[in-house]
Length: 147
Image (cartoon, rainbow, N blue to C red; front, side, top):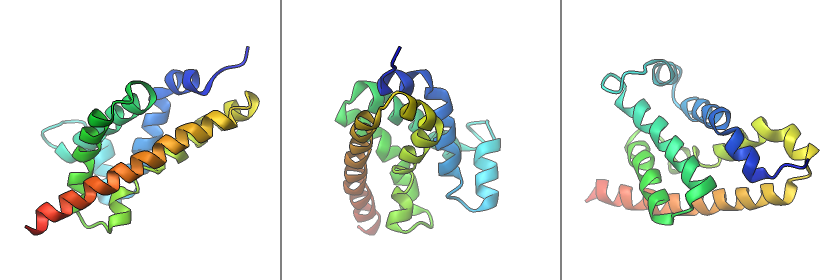
């Protein structure tokens, strides 16, 4: 039976989000990436914990809820931190398109097997829209920093 991309995204949520999380943490210097991935205590690792929780929530909202206000709040929690860290604007927002990479890497064979290219374009378009929303959020965060 042919699967839909939506069903694959739900079935593979844990693996996709974990892959995405690893890709995002890899945008930090080596020691930061190791710490964020390894330290599970929320008090000892508030940034890593916040990013992890934010990625989970973003994925859930993107694949299910599609509430733009909630999505903006989840994006804001990550972007606000990355906006004041040592990232360029593109680097601060790079975590968003990394979701495309995580989905493709995790579901590549299933997408090909089930001919889900049209559905893949739709989810990637939604991620592109999320990137635009993230750009607006980033600019607001930077404006607040410079006020």
